[in-house]
Length: 224
Image 1 (cartoon, rainbow, N blue to C red):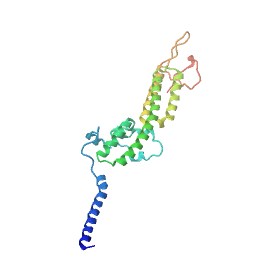
Image 2: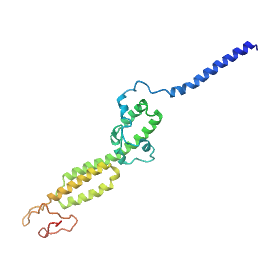
Image 3: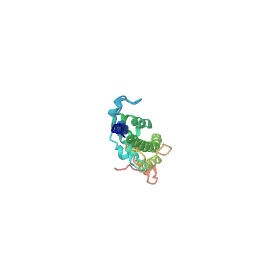
């Protein structure tokens, strides 16, 4: 082969090598491209200011192996309580977070998918407690001022303690306050139904519901 032929061959090989390097570099360049100037469909630029918008330890929660404690639903994220988030919110976050440049799509996709499972499961557990609380409040509002009602109050207080892990602290405090208010109302309204030979009981009379029945004429006010 002549020196001219060798030179031409070397030139072609050099060009191919350069092209090969350029082709190999294309994926890396594409991966490093900044977020698009235009937001994805249905994404609002103003929502970037809502990220993270709360105190929820998202990365820690996403690593939980089992279920998430219901009380964690009090944490906030995207300027909402976790018990307010819906699947639509999680889907939206998967669009907007990469666009806002907060985190890579693959990372946030995994975190939000896992978080949505934990949060929605905890919401379902809490919803059962919410339904129970609603039914209990309706029952409390209809309770007559009787010894049996006072006993029911004490039983409901015990049941509330057993259900603490299935509701948020705010839920528990709400029902505890309602139980206290109802118990006070029942004591204030307590009276013995009037009938021949019996007198109405003093409305301020405090009688323990767990003591044996005492004839009306032997009852005495609680000195305390």
